[in-house]
Length: 326
Ligand SMILES: [Ca+2]
Ligand SMILES: [Ca+2]
Image (tube, rainbow, N blue to C red; front, side, top):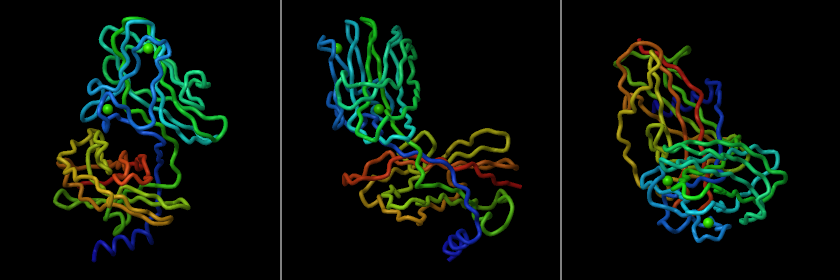
């Protein structure tokens, strides 16, 4: 009964301040393929015709396996790989991100373009260029771009390295844009029941609520498994980050039970409705100091519905919220 009461009070009393969000147009970690096959819709182009080009590999990248894309050849590179079709809209700022690394002795060259077909001749607009890629650990790259008209586009990754430079690896390719239809808010039970900053003793339970609200006009098909994990685990839908009174990030001391993702975990969230998880922060965190703590929660979904239906992919990070232990 207390839980029902809390949810009721929430909508009456709490003025909600929502954080920003991003929705994925494309997410590819190459974890769900069997190299040398590519994910559905991707294509390579051996433009210099030397018989070598981009390949998917079982090693070199990030993730559980850790599979990725690799280029290696003995002549000057002129080789492309292309994403599947992306429906992109004019007036929207898109963010492309990916990670790369090279073999220890090589300096590689790569640029990235978009165009209307999966062919080098139609790659019209450059998004990114780096002629001195030398990082030997996976390094995050972020670039923003806009498209001239709303249409279908393909993004092309183009290696133009000098000969005999060993290997260039690419992984975790993401295209996203700001999400305005879904928002995340974190509150505490104490915040609902009492005014002022939520305050607890060390022996209290610290009950938090991570709440997603559909503020758009259409249904959202959301992954509502709500597994809880640390920030580096993109298998968990909710990631909790807690910073202690001296500024240290607390260790997320829980081995998350990863239940197999089922089609039934994906549920429609209709406009105006809220879904979320009630969670005791003392399950993953050990609190020993008195003072003001900060909590940040991220909701994310990198998983397509196992039944193949269209689902919401993206991530939202809440505004930081404070609570006090005294
Ligand atoms: Ca080639
Ligand atoms: Ca990977």
